Amino acid sequence: MIGRLNHVAIAVPDLEAGAAVYRAMLGAEVSAPQAQPKHGVTVVFVMLPNTKIELLEPLGEDSPIAAFLARNPAGGMHHVCYEVDDILAARDHLVAQGARVLGDGEPKIGAHDKPVLFLHPKDFCGTLVELEQV
Amino acid sequence: MIGRLNHVAIAVPDLEAGAAVYRAMLGAEVSAPQAQPKHGVTVVFVMLPNTKIELLEPLGEDSPIAAFLARNPAGGMHHVCYEVDDILAARDHLVAQGARVLGDGEPKIGAHDKPVLFLHPKDFCGTLVELEQV
Image 1 (tube, each protein chain N blue to C red):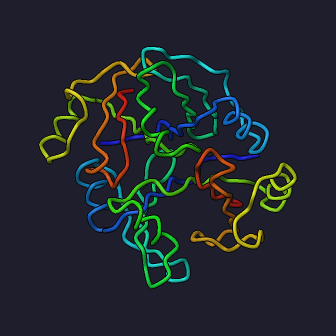
Image 2 (cartoon, helix red, strand yellow; image 1 turned 180 degrees about the vertical axis):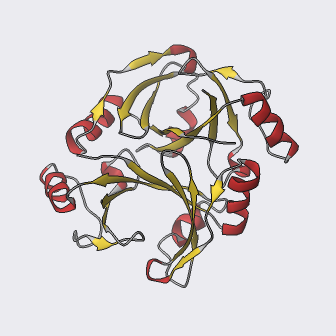
């Protein structure tokens, strides 16, 4: 069912500092910051040859990564995103197997303008999993 | 400097259960378990089209992931591994920039029989980073 690893998301308290780590220390190509007010984050993409790392900084009052950063003030790995061909079929399969989908279980349009769902970490090895339909 | 994302490592308390999550729920190809006593882990590889997920279960008394699992009993994302062409040049560049290399700073032969180093999470967005020379 799952296809490519679309990205690994790392929450950071300071996006400029995080981008500098990947650009200057690790020598990677890093995009310009993109504010995504609807998603409560500002993002840069670290472009690797086979996938992306997304660095996420909270944006606004109710950022979905605020609680994570309160627990992990230096930042940390926040989620992994796997690509699927058919997000509704994937969801129905997972729910039938007993997995919990976060929120109301309906795909939302994610930060890449594609339908996404998030799966409960407790059902996936302690890892927050995003599914993105590509 | 960094190239491909070689893998994302997820520590799990129960490798069989973790493999079942990826195989049966997420429909991915998962390798047979490989005990790596020198590294204190038993590993399965989740084979994605563009990279791998490594599920790690503690093996033996002094597993390097035991403390992580004590803090995260359900498991969780443990590290990311980036490929480099020249691990000594990468290390020297990072140390010159002020980054901390774990251990004695000399590459060890890692779980894939290639030279690896681990970098201090505090210097890399709260993320434990492995560099592997390919």
